[in-house]
Structure formats: C-alpha cells, structure tokens
Length: 66
Image (tube, rainbow, N blue to C red):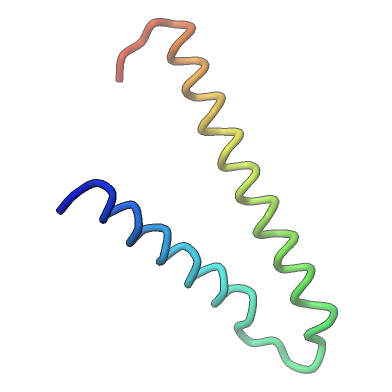
C-alpha cells in the first residue's frame, strides 16, 4: 500500500472520529454542546501540531536522526 493511500485512510478516519465526537450523545443542548466540542477538537489539533513541530525542531537542533 502506498504512503499516500495510508495517509488518505488515516485522514478519513480522523474526520469520522471528530464527527462522532462532535455529534455523539447530544441530548437537547445541541446549540450549546456542539460548539464547545468543536472548540476542544480545535485545541487538540493545535496542540498536536505544536508538539510535532517542537519535536522536529528539537531533533534538528540536537542533530539527532530518528
């Protein structure tokens, strides 16, 4: 399996799980709960990107090849 195919599958799975988290078990307060959940998802994505970027920068500075 090619890397681009694997990446597309992982991206599709991530979108499905984000939507499941956003819509699952919202009873009555959709206008309140959904924006809060999407804000949390956005924060998780930004945190993940920041951690990945800082890891690459650290490994580059220390000349550590993984």
